[in-house]
Length: 107
Image 1 (spheres, rainbow, N blue to C red):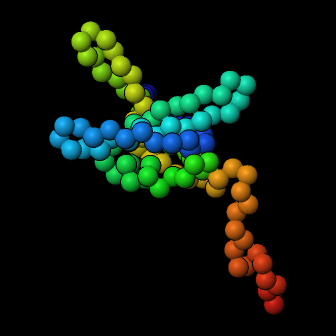
Image 2 (cartoon, helix red, strand yellow; image 1 turned 90 degrees about the horizontal axis):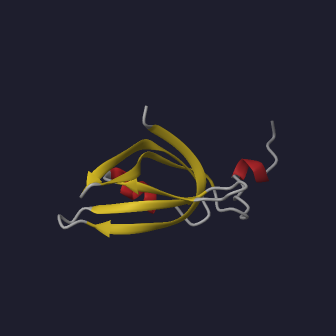
């Protein structure tokens, strides 16, 4: 099985345009823990739009597949996104209250 699931803080994206004009975005997520890491995840097709919707500091959950390719005798690994979901707002920012939270309801 070559699937992965990761949750991290959105740091930035890096954009590459192929010779054919296709846009490839690398989503950079930061992870917490004793040894924080920056994790690059490739985004193709419809995942490019999802990656562009993330804002710095958003908590993002990504599922995808692990793979790699051989080029000139070297193997290059990659993680490719299949779903991207923002699961929390910017760190340290208070989320806006919904109208139901800020009013007294009669029932």
